[in-house]
View (cartoon, rainbow, N blue to C red):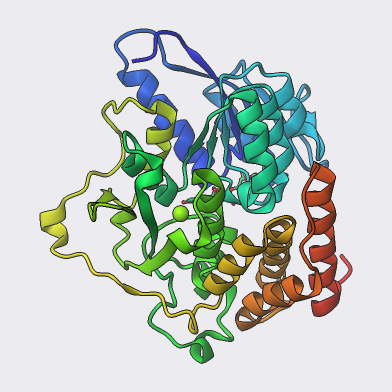
Length: 388
Ligand code: NAD
Ligand code: MG
């Protein structure tokens, strides 16, 4: 086990992953015989001041930051859009848990990487939007990117101890979301409430919509492409409604390794925090006999066109990922505000990719410019939001 206490920053501390992370940390601290493995030194959130105060109650010495400037917050908290990044710069952290939703997490993650901290990454949009830049900076600083996304945590476990050049194919599983057994026409006018009602996972609203459109798996394919250096033709997604097998890695010799676990994010969160150790967990345990069976079927590319967009983005490289991610963030936000029907989300992302040809990424600004252009494109296509 670890020999000293690691300083941890939790970005997105009030969200679904953030709250589960704090629970895993409390568990690992409570069950370790020796010194506490983790000390939470800083916590960041978007706009939920009460939630952040609640999270900070267990860590009275932790610094806090809130991205929004509205509402009240205790004195001493950092405030404003750049506050999470500053929090990371000043934290001297050993580990930064990135659980912000969206590309808003990009600058704080780059700050963590440049400081040489390890990053436990749930915030997949960061790799989708800026994978080339992030991986380049991480290899320069020596910071480790430890995936929290369950599929990628599974891939990492299946890759460990095996030669990377012998990997033939990596398959990510998708639950299929709440609409997996319905046709595109049947779900075209689904409401936000229907879209966020996921059968297997209790997650934030944005990833729940992504799961319903299959954009979540598309984002994850691009995430895996960057994280593990896999080519587009080595990556695939299949539907597995039970969400028990998270990832499958096939080697040249025909051997196939899969990672299994209960559908409980505390598993992959702990795997990242304790990596490569495997101490007792606090999540649900897997009982295959009670489950009875595991089933798999192909993900129909016509029913789920988001998957084809992922292939297109990986082939294009450069700013394509930033456009892909930002157009999706904007389209999902418009859907949640009931300004766009469910059935139009993926089409908007596809049109943004058509309209904004990929350019090389040399600097962060290249990513941010492409991100802004994609948001403008979607904004123009759906009309501006009603004035507040
Ligand atoms: P969530 O909506 O529940 O939480 C998001 C968190 O980010 C909140 O704490 C919010 O306050 C914070 N936040 C938003 N904007 C911010 C900003 N500008 N600066 C700082 N903090 C900000 O979302 P979630 O479900 O926890 O997902 C978080 C990330 O993890 C997403 O990228 C998601 O795709 C990924 N992920 C989630 C799950 C899951 O089970 N929830 C699984 C795999 C991956
Ligand atoms: Mg996932």
